[in-house]
Length: 333
Image 1 (tube, rainbow, N blue to C red):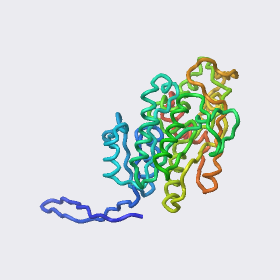
Image 2: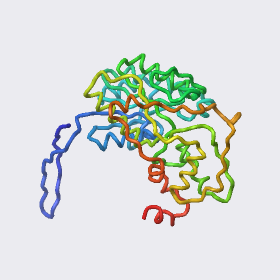
Image 3: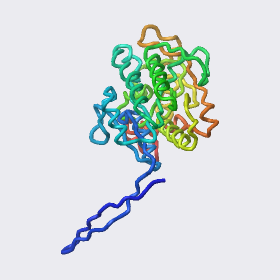
Image 4: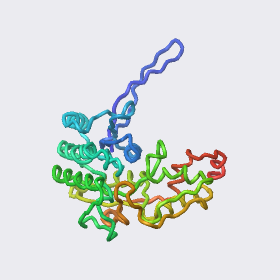
């Protein structure tokens, strides 16, 4: 799907200049990805770009030179960007997704997670909006959670994302909400994901490290989420009735301790220095739900949803951060 445009190619040879017209493929389908500089946004951007979509990403502080710079809190700027590009699909990844930061910088988080989402949905016009939300809209007391189950967020992050969902669906009847759990992927730095941040501790086997072995999580690869977004977008182009709330999640249930051990195993590293904490943490930042497992059957019934095994995905994204470079050869060869 797409069109052809003429592009002038100038070829220089000694004593001769040749100008030739060449056909350049221009994809017909257009997608705008907000938060394209972030962990999830980068993966969503790449997935669409690699699959014959004309893809534009926007960011703010880290946008240039690869992406468009747009302040999502500026309604005029958002309107101008959408009117200029006229995307068929908008995937809204931009968010403050760190629960402890939301607790300490609540006003800024509400502006981004709620107000900006509502503005984007309002200005989207006929574009299909996919709003990325979270499993933290649930309290984790009675899993698994269906798309129709009543949310009950325990922390401000979950509350802001739930309000963001409501703003999007109120301002854009045709929009979709995609709830996902804790994410990992090709990080620029280990601190970018609550999963990859453990890698230094896993590798530093000289110190005993205590890691939570109570709260249940479903680590999910951002590449898989990117594919879900693209498949949902393509399904929507075929079926305009697709809208509302969807869930996607990895299907391997793990505590952070079990993730750390799996990371160690993936790289043939020792894990005897890792110690499980089986008590619920008290007074350490924002409350987290015990087990917010998502029921993904609505997407699965549409044939949407590929899941990369955790050890495979974590090996793909963490090998550049190995301390002992000799392991790079032994792990992959």
